[in-house]
Image (tube, rainbow, N blue to C red; front, top):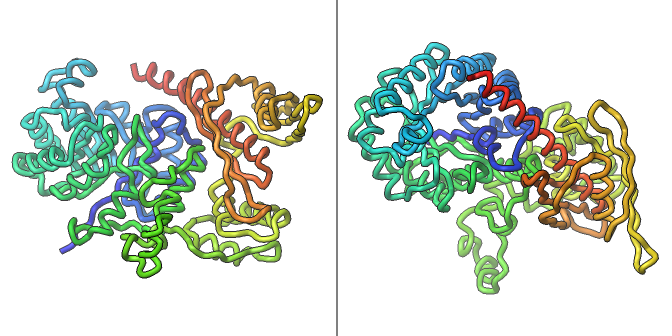
Amino acid sequence: MVDQVIIFDTTLRDGEQSPGCSMSVPQKLRLARTLADMGVDVIEAGFAAASPHDYDAVHQIAGSITGTTICSLARCSENDIKLAARALAPAPKKRLHVFIATSPIHRKHKLGMSRKEVIERAVAGVRLAREFCEDVEFSAEDAIRTEPEYLAEVMAAVIEAGATTLNVPDTVGYTTPEEMSARIGYLNEHVPGIHQVVISAHCHDDLGMAVANSLAAVRAGARQVECTINGIGERAGNCALEEVVMALKTRADYFGCRTGIDTRKLYPASRQLAAIIGSFVPANKAVVGDNAFAHEAGIHQHGMLASRDTYEIMRPEDVGISRSKLVLGKHSGRHALADRVRELGFSVGEAELESLFERFKNLADRKRQVFDADLEALVIGEHNDAGGPWRLDHLHATSGIGESQLPSAAVAVTGPGGQTVREAATGDGPVDAAFKALARATGVEFELVGMRVHSVSEGEDAQGEAELQMRIDGVPFSGRGVDTDIISACARAFVEIINRASRQSSAVVETGKAVAANG
C-alpha cells in the first residue's frame, strides 16, 4: 500500500523570514494561487499576530483560495490564537498551528519557564485553538534538542488536549538523518495515541541536510513534510519542496509514499517565487536549476544520445521544464497565449491574462518572435506597483567612449502620494548613472553588492534579465528586472529593491506596534 505524504508549504511564512525576501499581500496571493493549483495540501499563509500586514495576508488568502487548507501560525497565547482564528475565518478549510519551545536551551534562556509550565502553556494553547478549529497542529520548537522523554511527555499531553498533527521541528538544522529517524521512532513507541494523529517534520538546512532529514522522518513514519519553494527560509533555509517531492516520486520504490503534487508545476513555481523575491535560482540547484538537465561532458552526451536513462533519473517535462520551441508573434490571439501559458505550467486568472496579453503584444511589437522563455519571463516578471510606493515611469540613458563622453541617465519616478520626481546623474556607465539618478530621486543610499545579467531567450532581440544584490541601511536585498533593453532591466531591478526595502521597513514598524500591543 502506498501512503500519502501531506505537503505543508510554509513559503509565505517561514520562507518570507529569509532576509530580503519580504512579499507584498498581492504577491502572496499570487503565489498562494500557484501553490493551491500545484496541489499543496496545507498553505501556511503567515503569522497573523506578527503584524497587520501578516494578518491581512492570511485573511485575504483565507477568503480567496479554495481546495486546500489555509493555516496560520500562533504562539500558545490567547491573543495570538484569537487573531489567527479571526484571520482564518473565511477559509472553507482551515488549520491553527500553535507552538512553544521545549528544549532546555529555550526553556531557560528564552521562556524562563519550567518543564511543567511549558506543558501547561502547550495544553492551554491547543485547547483554545480547538474551540475555533478542529484541525490543530502543535509544534514543539527545537524538538530535536529537547530531552526525548520530556518531548514524549509534551506530545502525549497535547494529543489529549486535541492536537491532530504533531510537528517535530529541527529548528536550527542540527540533526542528522539517523537522529531524526531515531527521534520519530522514539515518539512512536512512547507517546500514547500518537498513531491517531499525523506526525510532521520541519527541517532547516544549516548543515545542508534538511531534505535528507525530512526524508528520514518519512521513512520513520512521518506523514507530513513542512517545506518551502526553492528551500527559502531562516538562515540557510528550509527543506526544499521540489526536492523532497521529486525524491518521493523518483524513489517511490524505496519510500513507498506519494504526494498529491502536480510535479509539472514545480519549475514554474520556482521561477515565479524567484521573480517575486528578486532572487535567482542557482544553476546547479537540484530539480529546478538551469543545469539540472544539462549535459556537457562528452561521455554523458554520448550516453544521452543512446538512451536518456543513462544519465537522467527524471524527465525535465516531469518538473515543468519545457523543451518546446513554439513561437508566438504579434498576430497571435488571447486563446493561443492562454493555452501556451497553461502548457508551460502557469496559472493565470482573467484579469492577469488581460494584463499579460497587453504586455505580450508590446513585446511582440519589439521582437520578431516570442519564445517560451519570453513568455515565462512575462508571466513571472509582472511588476506589482502595489508592492511598494515607487514606480519607474521614464528612463533615458546615454553612453560613449572617450574622456569627453560622460555616461548619463535621466529618470522620472512616481513616489508615495503619487508625486512625480525627476532626477539625472552621470556615472561610470549608463547603468551606474541610472542607479545614481534613481537613488537621488528616491532618497535612498545603497551599496551594490552583486549584479548578474543574462539573456532570457535567444536571438539578437532577446530579452535581458538583470539580477541585483544590494544593501540598504546594512540590510541585504535582491531585485530582478526583465526588458529587451538591459539598462531598463537593471533600473527595474533597482526599483524593485527600493520597494522591497520600503515594505520591510513598514513591516518592522508594524511588528513593533504589535509586540507593544501584546505586552
